[in-house]
Length: 214
Length: 293
Image 1: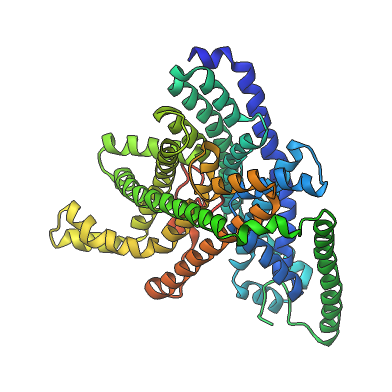
Image 2 (image 1 turned 180 degrees about the vertical axis):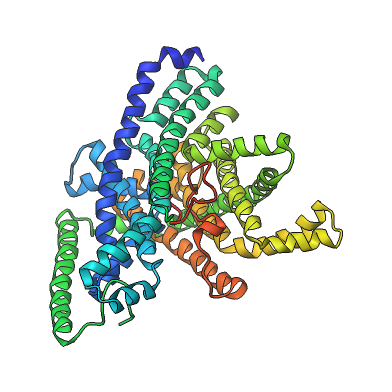
């Protein structure tokens, strides 16, 4: 216990980094993932295929290999962004594929009859979208999207291998110096992650309740 | 073109417009691809010397050996995780609070904790040395983590069996353990198969974390190769290709199993727990998406 209290400021810094990675990569992944999903459900076949290929490739590559490619490989192409942004780039490339799949499944979960019914009572395209299709999609998308963001939180731990002093890196450093205090250190750091994860799932549950159909 | 919720069937004018979009986006995509190839060429990344290791028999053998170790870790991890998951899943469904609470605690803890953290902790616990000890830590970490995920899949699978099945079994006088064993679990396994295979894909990808503790495996092999030949990009490319191939094979297996044993009907991620670890405490509503690591 004493180790954690003595190093509390360092731990706070480390989890600040974890949180920073989560927020920035999460934000960018949502944007890029939405673009991919738009390509996949849109009418242009070429874009659909390209996005599908991207998703297949990057979803099946381990994040660690992607990080290797970006953090150690890109400097060889004279692409230098600094460690933080390199890690963010790899996290985004990876996470956006899951965002895309989550969004796409949300749109696909709407039965075709919904749109047909909307058109048959005379709603135009915009009205159909705004009042019938999109609200239902948003609702369907919350749980899988929350899962993706939770996984992202946990995946930021991989950045400890690539030069970011975040939560897991802090744990490794503490363990190196205080091998005897294995359990308090591990459980303490794990609690840090659990808190972030619980915050996300709490927010998702709140949204879900808010949007529940009465 | 298949009917879509988002669009009406295109008329002649819209079709013409779509053709224009197709041309523009094709040019754009080709441009991006060309830029990447150009940059790679300019920096001499296509030089034969950098690719040569991957056609050298000795290195190929090392890669095959690494792939073997990776598969070995994945198989050990999945078998162990299945056992652990079954114990924890049944524990969570138990009527006895003494069993239910510890099972719940273990599952929630390992699902919300990063796998890498668990692996490193295990590694320090059994002695932080590379090689066999690191391999053990990797497998242990994978078992603990995936066991927790499997537990949720098991629980959701058993809950997805229609209630009447258990009620009918009780009505003809079966005891609880018998109902579980010969009525619920066989049906649940059928429901769970696709999720189980998807989680196996996640476990396979996760074996790459062995890199962090210097456990033998595909990614660590890669480290040794690009450490020697200074060809990070090429090595990452080849390793990614191997992982993608293995994962696509497993995906194909999952699809086949789904068609063969479950039927064309796709199960909603909610019913079976899904592939990503869902948010803790929301096992019922959680999950969906796909294996995130």
